[in-house]
Image (cartoon, rainbow, N blue to C red; front, side, top):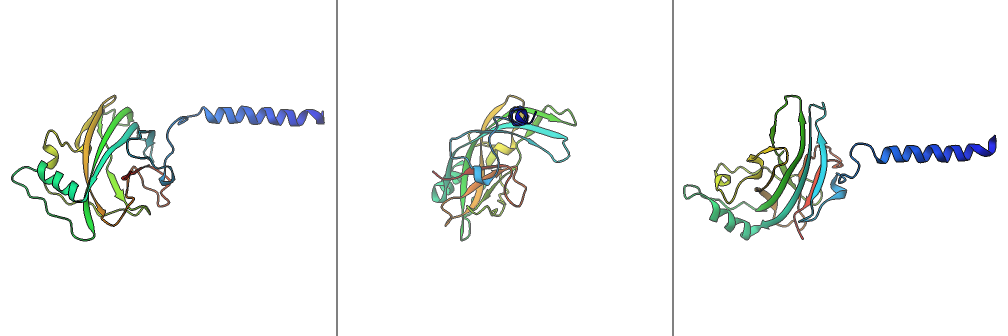
Length: 195
């Protein structure tokens, strides 16, 4: 009987491994800062609130990024004539991320059929968040320069929009996060804002 024990253990291990690999979330992109995505590379995964009352599966691609003088000039050209854009104080500068977002599926306790994308946060290469942008303007109402996080998504919708960010001009490898909450940066999507 002892000769059959190793065979049984190997069989049980194989069955368990197979079951785990086909469980919920299999085939989804890995989350966390150590699994960052380059420009133009789509990332797909499911995000769920802690209390489980909302679950979304999304695909996000950061298509391109403008920063510094290029971003400042672009922003000024898109502003309505009644608004002015002030340059950022040292050591910060503007960055503009063009992002394509698809809502693949969505479940929530209120049975709502639409939702907005969660806030994107710019960070340093070390994962430290930059200050939020205080831009009391209507720049995102321009039809060819829509703000991504103002768009109302229904399941199946794909939309390309923009987010205006503040980053350190001395940072060569800034990043952008989506649904990152843990201090160890092991959750959420992380996108590289550089080539």
